[in-house]
Length: 212
Ligand SMILES: N[C@@H](CCC(=O)N[C@@H](CS)C(=O)NCC(=O)O)C(=O)O
Image (cartoon, rainbow, N blue to C red; front, side, top):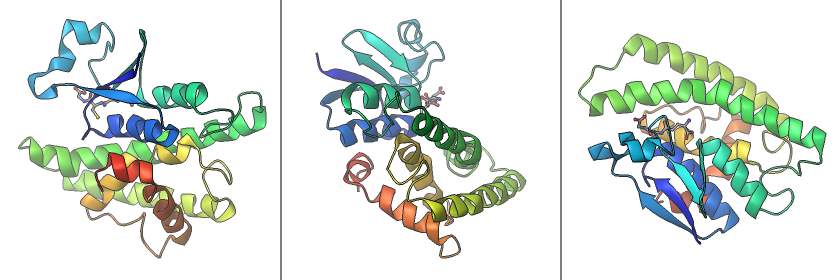
């Protein structure tokens, strides 16, 4: 049975998984979640995704939620040894990959998600953007990306010289930054970050998923 991803094409976490599916050339069906009617809060949905969030994957009856966990599962099952995620038998490479994946969650997502909430989500739902929070989050994100610039001055990608899921995980919220006129990913001030971002955001997988 073809893989089914329950999500929404325009949603950031769904895009994270769709990019991986495209990278791996795995056939799939996107089962659209009608979030406007709160379909993801129904008991049937929560029976699979107890937090009432999307996406989740259904691989022939095996279900899994959390976009990054789904991405790891897909890469290990469908990618072939060492594609987007190191061979689990290579402990050092796996540890460096996990370090990079953790960097994304702790040093990027932790700031990029609340920024998107303030600058994009709140205006959409008629709430006031907290300008002080935006200032604080923007400064914190810039400080983290300055460190990224050092890391990416030493290796092509975050976990070494090979592209991994840790890099791809940045794409949905990274591309949201430009929509907020936050240019750290493209700025000449951070040349290694700019080189890396141009590389990953130029991938055919992401362009297809992001509708570019
Ligand atoms: N950590 C989860 C987050 C999932 C998430 O926040 N999904 C959003 C859509 S991008 C959602 O379901 N929002 C509706 C809600 O939280 O009620 C993942 O990576 O899959």
